[in-house]
Image 1 (cartoon, one colour):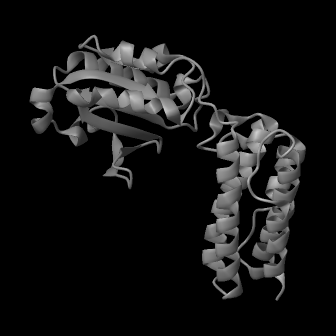
Image 2 (cartoon, rainbow, N blue to C red):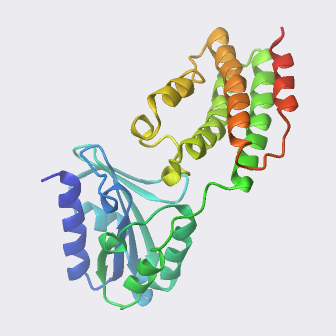
Length: 267
């Protein structure tokens, strides 16, 4: 059995035996049938209100399996690196904040809320999980397309300006923003918008081979020539996407503006 599945079972058993715990759920790959030996596992664990102040989350995690590291990341999530280097993410919240589950709905697809269920002593958890079910968020919209094109232009000009100043590392970092907007447009084009917010996830399977090669052409190494070529290719790709998507959607920017970006490539 995968360690990740053992971890899920261990968390479930521990929740059932610990009177501090009001309810618990998991999210991510294993709730969608996509988990494997490389996946991390993410949990939301709600502590009974009257016991929250004295709850020691570090010790609770350490009692699951041996750990090498526990820390809070930049999002406030408690991350555990277990001794076999599998990652676990834990959100410990008081029971009174269970309503936060409803905030998940706009973020993605939850095809089977039952697989998210770990434990509940409140009779509140499953109705909240059922709320997540239903139609997927609508991603293929004029609003999303225009935001992606507008953001692409913003990132592209920013990145090219710092490149011309000789800040290659910074330009390469900004290229990530360019790529994200292009990739979201490509996902709309190919109708693979299920992973809209985490657009690179499973990209090798989600995009056609032809589109994947186009995306590869807008990646770069840390040298001026490679970065400049990626920015050049990204304009060409954006122009092509504009032509294609304008047939079905209302795109606010004109092709002329994208073409004008080529002037910044001149040394």
